[in-house]
Image (cartoon, rainbow, N blue to C red; front, side):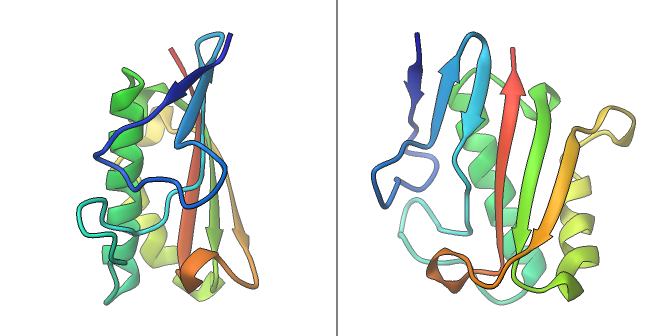
Length: 126
């Protein structure tokens, strides 16, 4: 049976989806962008600040499901400019132990919601 995961500590969905769904001890998150959940405003300025906000939003979703980044099995990173890869990766790396980091893909896309520069989703397991 699926369980819907929701927290006020991460941005509310802006469409017909949920922040995350738990099924058979597996968590499937929706993509997070750099929206401040308190103000609804985008965090902008530089790619590192944007990436940090995305990861903090994801941290809140994981916490709502009783998990941490240690539970993450796979991440998907969507970026608008592959030239930002190194800066995004620098921030992303601070959330994982390199020896046990999840599997991952990073894909450059033509556009992202609200014209952000980075969106990240995850799959995790208890």
